[in-house]
Image (tube, rainbow, N blue to C red):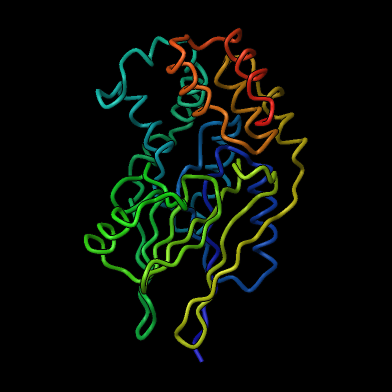
Length: 282
């Protein structure tokens, strides 16, 4: 009987402490393959270290939106709002890009593939993408409409779809199809600070899945934001990323939408107002 066990990890976001714990655990188990489903870098202080930990190890690595952001930022791409490059709010991104560029990792990220197909004879086909097959920022979540799921299964045929990006584990059946989200190793958004990932096991031509949650030295990961200089140099966005890791909640996107709704600018003053108005998020 042919069996295969694969670990699919994603959204590391420069959290070397969480990644090290996950890789150590996986190394002790009967897992034949590791697939990294994007967003290795950014939002945290150890992007270079994470790249050193995973590159040339035989892992399959897929591009995520933050990996591509590093390339676009270095290129000053027209795909990005041009005001971002001079906005102090995004100093953290510039800090990370400079670290990666100095160590020649941006060009490595530039050449990552967008997807991974797993198709063994007589078993369901799996399509793995960071977001959805349509776009790396369209993550699989419970709110994804049936209309969108229908378009995906028609345009990108497979039996099982595995994504990441939302930082939230998910398992959803849609007709004869199955959609799963790995959750996040580095910065989960489900108020559970443990490193989270997905294990897929092929048995008797059927895939079985288990969601893994692993304790690691969370306090050391937070301390790295300060010790590396990232928190001080990165400004407000780095502070928000720090608090996302601290609370395992998605503060940046909520704060950004709040400022737009209230016609306010990004700043430490408005960030403090936002926190007072949304204490339940913290």
